Each structure stands twice: as structure tokens, then as C-alpha cells.
Length: 182
Image 1 (cartoon, rainbow, N blue to C red):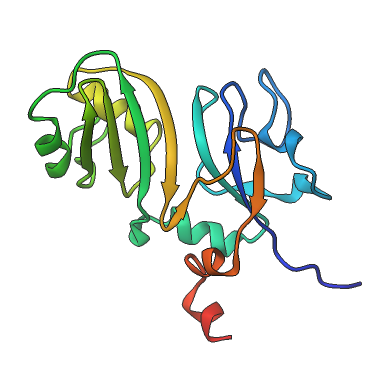
Image 2: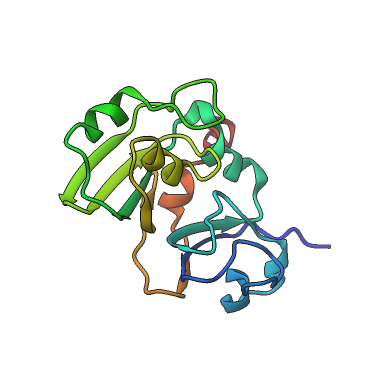
């Protein structure tokens, strides 16, 4: 037996695909990967079928946990298309935290950048279920398109449906302290 090194992959998830290892109602994003035993990979931060953008996949559980662990406050940046023009006080509300339906606590502070009346960039540091859509619903708007551009220091830089291996520098962004010392 030989030990295979962990694999770390950046994928540009297209619309109408799912972040699963098995094709279901929609095809899996893994079906486009030309990797041996890609069924052993898992997603660090899933996206819905109707959401596009940056997905990170790995077979290193500790590394993906470092991305998703709430105490790490890993920034995730989304480009959001809205049904209605953004309210003037939306950025202040998001900076304070908003109450999501069914949640006892406010969201952590988020940063909202207005690109145009119905196109914004939102940076969050948590990953609650359908969080971005629920945040805009909480302020009376509806998300019509959602695209993840960045996770931590890793930015989407490949075309739709394409993928690439992460660089050593990108991998180190989410390595544990003990792994960095090794």
C-alpha cells in the first residue's frame, strides 16, 4: 500500500448541477471532473442547484472543517441579483446582523457592496442553511441570481464547468496550525 496525498480542487459550478457525489434530479458537479476516484472527494461549503460559482472539494476532512468551522469566520463572497432595488439601509442592517426566520440569534455582521440597484456583492462569515437568500428575504427582497466568487483568499478564476487543482499557497490558507508546523 502507498499513501496517496490529499487532493484539493477548485470547481466553477454551473447552474442546474448539485454538490453531491451522485447524480440525482440534477447532475453532480463531480461528473465533469477528470480525476481518479473523485467519489472520495467532498465539498467544503455546498451550493444549491440554482447557485453558481466557486466550490472547493477535497478528501482532507480536517482542511474542509477549517473552512466551515464557525469560529474561523471564513469569508465567503457572493454576487447577488435581486428582484427589487436594494434598500438604502440594507448595508447598515447587514453590518449589524439580521434576524432570519426560525433563528434565535442575529446573523454575524456582513458586508454589502452595492454595484447597481439590483446587483450587490455580499460577504458573510458563516454558512447557515440558505443564508444569503434568507438574509435578503429578512429585509423584504428576493434573490434571483446567486454566484459565489470567493472563499477566504481563494478566488474563482476558471470558466464555468472547469476545474483546477489548488496551489500549495491556497491549500495552506486553511491548513491547521499543526499541519503548518510539520
